[in-house]
Amino acid sequence: MTSQPAAVRAGNELDLGKVALNVGSIGGLLAVFAWAVARLAENPDYFVAAVLIGISNGALIALVALGYTLVYGIIELINFSHGDLFMLGTAISLFTLQRLGYGSELGLGGTPWLGILIAALVAMAMCGTFNVLAERFAYRRLRRAPRLAPLISAIGISFLYQNIGLWGMGAAPLRYPDLLPKFDFAHALLQRDSLISFTIKDVFVLVPAVSLMLGLTYIIQGTKIGRAMRAVAQDQETALQMGVDVNRIISFTFLLGGILAGAAAVLYGLFFNNTQFQLGFPAGLQAFTAAVLGGIGNVRGAALGGIVIGILASLTVTYAGGQWANVGVFTVLVIVLVFRPSGLLGEETPER
Image (cartoon, rainbow, N blue to C red):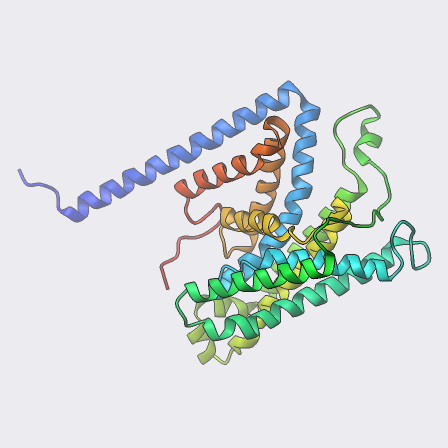
């Protein structure tokens, strides 16, 4: 009786491993679904309110996560300065609003919308410029260096942004103008006292966030420069031989990431009405986690990861307390990566 060849045995073990992973994934999803159904049946208002909060928070996380996933998808760099770039965006938009006369009173004719638009454009332009400059002077010369070198450079840029924020804002948290109208769609619809809340603030976050995500998807999938971005992400050398200006495409990618960070910063300020120079680290950590969870390098994955992280954090805070928020999020992240290392929507790719 002959034994099986080693290759056959290895293939069988691999198949069994995949089956075990799939069974584990399905079992975990069923457990989460059962828990959610039980909480929903126990107190529907409590559960739905937590989910709605999580969706709004998740949309903000997703916008920041897109900056991480865009850069990684092009040059495989984890841009750890991106969270602090987002923090600078909140400061820039706040100072712009203050210069326009928005504080305790409305400026520019007594309406918030023109001021918000100007602040958003300034923050997006400045964050995009900062990101392009960082790519040009801190990352470009390190593309062919060992991977640790650009990572350390990104951390250095992060500290630079933090100190700029500290110099500009000071150590104390700053109040962001509360400019949006007060109206709760959920209360108006339900016609009763309820924990469920869905305000103009939520709409103001979700509509621009979804619009920006759709716009980014169109740029990547439906435009000439988007095709060039995908070509550079696939193989820089081949793209260069085909006439693609690789440096310009990479700079454009950083520009897009910075613009999204600036937009997210304005939405964050108007939603939470505060900012501080230490905001970048926790925001960046959540956004990076969302990008990894969804499949870093995958735009749709970053969007999905942001929403999932937002809902998970909100449910954990609601049912276990605020001190457990990060524990719940990172526990789920570890479980997902154990069973699907490429993330929820990521694809297994060979090492370049």
